[in-house]
Image (cartoon, rainbow, N blue to C red; front, side):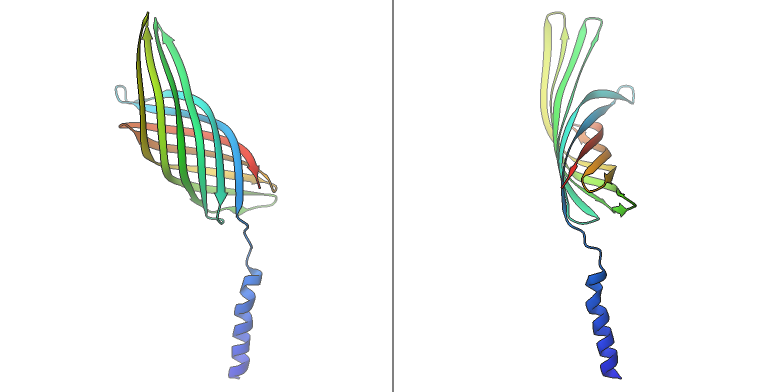
Length: 183
């Protein structure tokens, strides 16, 4: 009886890897839109800090953890009664997305949290008549956020996320939406 029970348990444990769902790690590349806002400490409101493009690369280790490297731009200008303000910036970011990918019929969804580091660089200028004041700065910050990724078929994906960071004691909120190819 002991031999039969031992054989049954051994056969059961050896067959577990056969039933496991194999997840192949995946690379992806995407291009999209990025919009940045900052908190205005004078009015306790948010101010548009520019729109731009976003280029991203991602790698999924498994259904739960992925890593992302992205480059996003933000630029804007505004003129009011002789004053002109210009913003020209970019952000380089490395982050992890942690969530769970749900496979559905023909597509998959992955809601996730974002945790990473970003480097924001900007050139800001204000002009009035013939005078111009310019300020440049660079700062690195911890980035946290929420997002979701939908994958359609084997190769097409879209990703939407909201991220929050603080550079030079100013709160930055960024929304981005990308579309890309998964291989």
